Structure formats: C-alpha cells, structure tokens
Image (cartoon, rainbow, N blue to C red; front, side, top):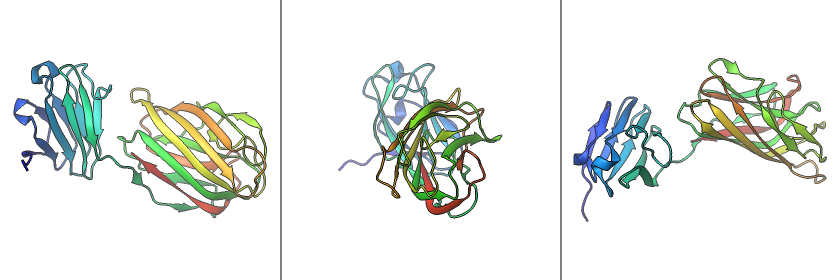
Length: 257
C-alpha cells in the first residue's frame, strides 16, 4: 500500500503543485492555508489538510474561487481533516472527519436562564437539546443568541405553533420561543437547531421541534425563523419570556460544529 507524503505547517502557507497528494498537517497556531489558482493546479489536483493543533485553520480559495460553494473553509482544532479536489475552476470536498463538539450539560432545576458561552467563531451549526425541562410558572421558554456584547433581545423573526397541549401560534419577539403557549408544569423535550447562513452579516436560521411528556394533547410545537447577531455569535441562552420563572426540572446541552 502506497503511503501518503506529509508536511507540517505552523503558519500561513500557500498550497502549491508540490503538495499534490500530500497531507498538510497544521500542528499549531491560527493561520490561513491559501490555495493557488485552480487553473494553475489543474483538474484532478487533490490534497489533505488536517488541523491537529489548538488554533483555527482557514482554507482560502484564490480570489473568488470557492470550496463547496464557499470562499473559505474552516478547519476546527483537534484533528479535523478534509480531502480537497480541484476541478480546474473551483474546489470540492471529497471526504471529511468533521464531528460535533458536545458542550457541558446543565441541570435546569434552578435559576432563570442557562447560558452556553465560548462557542468558537468557526461554528456554523449549533443544536440545543432539551430533556424534560420545566419552569415554575406559565411563561413560555425561549432561546436567545448573543456575541461579545451580550445576549440580544431584538431582531428575531419567524413563528412557532403548537406545544403545551394547544395549537396556538406565536410570532417571535425577544427570542426564538419554543411553544405557542405556556402552561404551569409543562415538561418539554426536543431540539433547537441553529445554522449560519452568512458570515458577513452573522445571520442565523433557527428551527425547533418540541414535544411534551406531561401531556399527549395538542400538536408538537414547530418553529422556524432567523436572527442576525451584531457580531460573531459566541453564546446561546435558554430562558423564559418573562425572565423571572425559574427552572425546576430536567437538563439541557448543546453541540456545535
């Protein structure tokens, strides 16, 4: 079996013809791998890029050339790798070992909000998972996004319908509300998925599917909407609309990639 040659990089580097069929192992630091023009490297040029360090490595196409339709591709730390193929015009990924990072679970048995902070700038997908979460009153639970300036309470568009035993629909206000109505002792399970749409404007799209274990009445709550943060997102919060009802049951966690 023929082995793949490899080179180690610790700083900014431009991928050239000599790197054809090579594993470029980025072992430390935050820096950019710049791709030589696709027309120069030609149709069929392939190489592996791996980030075995602790920084973030950005792969940047030449000028307006794209990688799977995007101008850049971010390699997260911890051994993330991608196999890239050039078609003579742009770049395509043939394989990747990307996997989600699991956060630290938080018990939702006290307090009025649960924050997940230090979400890395390279994250493009975030999923919040609720397991039997309940609050002390009837206020509706909601998810809010934030950045270095704090959690934001405006700019959430879209709606949610159903949940807590009712088919009530509700437009978003200060966050992505998880059900159309609130009830005392409602016990919620489900997922809230966030996907980055545009890095330039920090625009995220949200979707949610939430069911109750305290009742089998009424439709499952389904929501969808969008929100652009003022700067790069680095936190998400689970709280209530009134901000004063306290959590009294369950737990919550996030994954991101």
